[in-house]
Image (cartoon, rainbow, N blue to C red; front, top):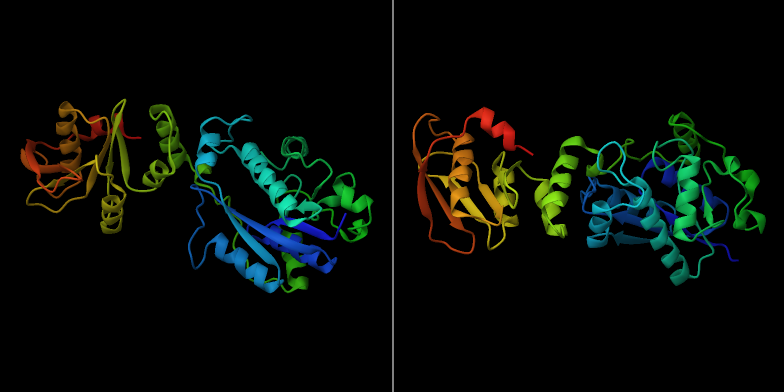
Length: 335
């Protein structure tokens, strides 16, 4: 067993401290930073990935970015260990990460994996029984070191073999970050983000949209999840939905995300949103999409107004006269 390890680095406080501890112990660290279609912190300038790169530069360690795309969506649709409060499959998510960490461990010739996890900090994935499940399912039994809570666990293989000095590891537990903040100050770590889940699947509204997508789409893809981040969503048929832009930025994004077979709606002669209809589009659904388009436009709500619509791949629009949908009926189809 050598003194090389794979570290899971989100860029947050706990994983940053864990990296610092390992470097101080003379461990050669290769960091993995994971992202997925559901990350809330992927900003180029302020996101977790950028923060993780800053940490790697501070401690002069190698870092690899791992994007979990379609395989992650497949897992979200059918997790072995279920969901948290919303649609967050935290155990399955961690198992997937650790399996990839094991692959990296083999590729890099490293001896073990470590993380910034703290026992009892997160209710679903950082319970003792959950951690045992993750260790077993990932095939890393005895090889996952959690330096911030190490003294609450049996010694790992690198500790037993003297690669890591157990006496210099910590005994933190629970949700308070006071000890970590104090420790960060002594380690010269002062640039870290506020604590947050960082995952859209933990958010009630987004989880509802993702649940609807899984229910009505046989094989959800990454491109489908991108659309879930934008606008207001309405299910107008088992196989068809409508998305309404909320502002100019979302209107532009909807135009970009619309696919060739999607329909785009706009009110003739009045300011209004970009509206996209996606799915198995039937002629009888066009009036409903038009009514929704009018509801969010500046057009009068009590008159029939022309609405233009076209397939995105076709620059020649058609028109239909419609009246805005009322709020009661709108609420029934809102996702």
